[in-house]
Image (tube, rainbow over all chains, first blue to last red; front, side, top):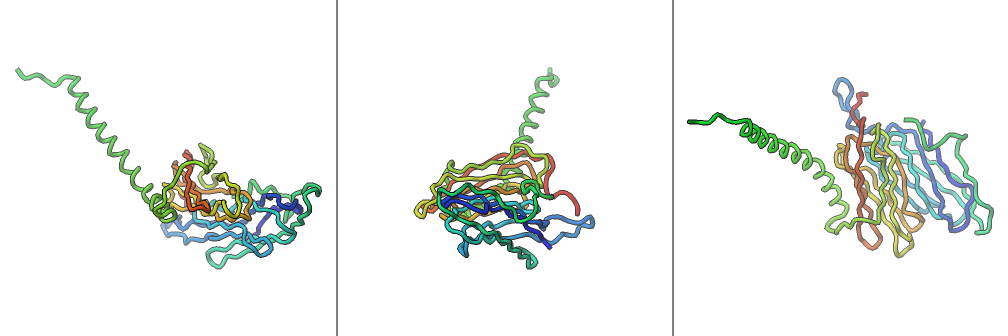
Length: 129
Length: 155
């Protein structure tokens, strides 16, 4: 099964803009490649990526074939309240994965946040091809 | 007495023919696929005018592998309810399909800044168009030289 790796700060100050990194393993088969016999390989890509913050949509990306395999997206959102960030990927052939992370939002004079990873240490910047 | 064609005449004729050929060769492909990109852009923009500036598109000028090209795009915006970036669309001129990705934002995004990795089938120009909450459109483009193109390998 596809595995997703997300990076969301575990705590943030209210009103702070936080950066979220999301990586998922997926071949992103373009639909333009052919086998050696000349048969076209059918398209199999992730079409939509959505991030919801306590149920409210804050970011969305519509992907096409020109997104590299194992889509990696970095975006940001405003830390408004403590709660859950749900990241979901949906695509061809019934592909659907949702990964969520919790965030604690405190007053502006709170201690600085430390990054939290959903899985053991693996650098999200250079994922597998 | 009839003069034999001199070296100068010969060169003039050959030069003219080559120049003509070169002109046709350059014009043909340059007009073919970018038209598809223009159509795709028109579909998003409609009849609105697209300004240049405000959008910052970062791509490496030279990439070895077109299968994963890091792309970062950002737009200067206060991201408030009244003035924010609604979307950023990315297009290419020589990929099999001009659309690459569309990012949708709201004031909750905080910053209109995203990064991802894309595929490039050839050395080409990548265009990013941003759509603002006031209905205006802004564009930026970047040229990328690709050594090993995506989409060519057999499975």
